[in-house]
Image 1 (spheres, rainbow, N blue to C red):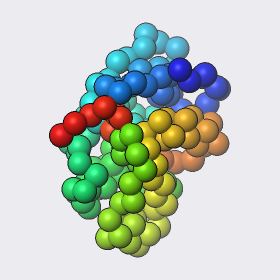
Image 2 (image 1 turned 120 degrees about the vertical axis):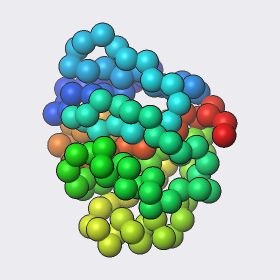
Image 3 (image 1 turned 30 degrees about the horizontal axis):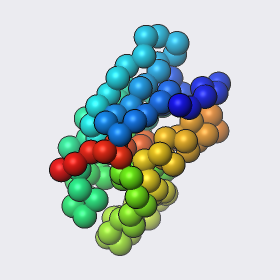
Length: 134
């Protein structure tokens, strides 16, 4: 379980498990979201049509950027139960667009998200639950 901190963002990860996430929106009723999702501090989570780390493509990154609503400073990737290095072409694509990318296991990404949000970082997260199987 995560502890909620004050943040500049409206959508925060309250908790997570192997199937999905509990999202809190400015003190409203919590939202359960199962499966891979895209989330940014100012936009409601939506499904992220992505499940295998080996298939991460520019299309997946472009979907994350589009969900952010503005060019993010950072893309936070939580790719399941283990840290997986994204393909070099993805890192080059993000770097070429002046977008930082941080890749980690999903639990670490869920812990990192509220810190970045509280710091006012313009970001978007792509998160795959640890128990998600393709």
